[in-house]
Length: 255
Image 1: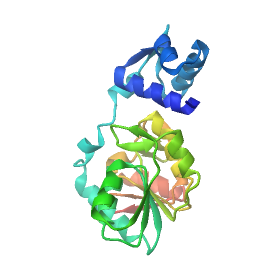
Image 2: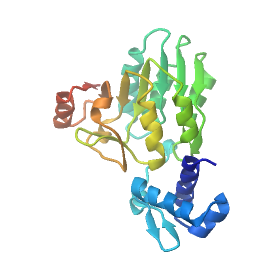
Image 3: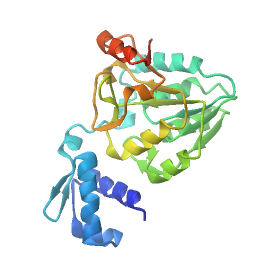
Image 4: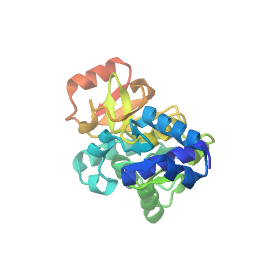
């Protein structure tokens, strides 16, 4: 098992159980105490887990502010997400290859695109894959990877390796936090590196988010605001934040 895969697995154990001991991890992964302690130190720096004598505890922030599962979020701001999706779908040209990330807003985009059989869609989202596989005739590619259950997304080292060999016309990606100073952020540390890799596979990055994500800063900083070509959000977004982002040269479309 590679280091990043082991770290992902440790984070999953902490998310599920709340705590773990060095001895348990040593036996599970068949590595030395020192290796496990280095892994826990790295996770402390990346995601704020709490190292204790002989083990580690899940990040208190993670437990308190844990993002609700994707299924529970589908009906949140549904009207906004549908309008955003309708707008974005109209910007997709003939015969384009697009990437659809995990998240509820991108799932709404997928639903708007099911009538398009001229497109190729790449995704790391199980719900998007399911939607397109059952309801459309477009070509669909999935990247594979470690399953993050709450989001039903495929992330981690394997997914990132596949993404290194992919190039698309447009990336359509959702973000948990969008802030003019702190940039784009996600809630789950395991998702961080995968999101960064996704942003590298196209020159056209379209970030989709309802107005509640504007001005928010989540646990893990993904990239500066200028890494996006455009942001599509709702007209309820804070106009001051919108102006700040536009001043940085990023197009913001309100729908």
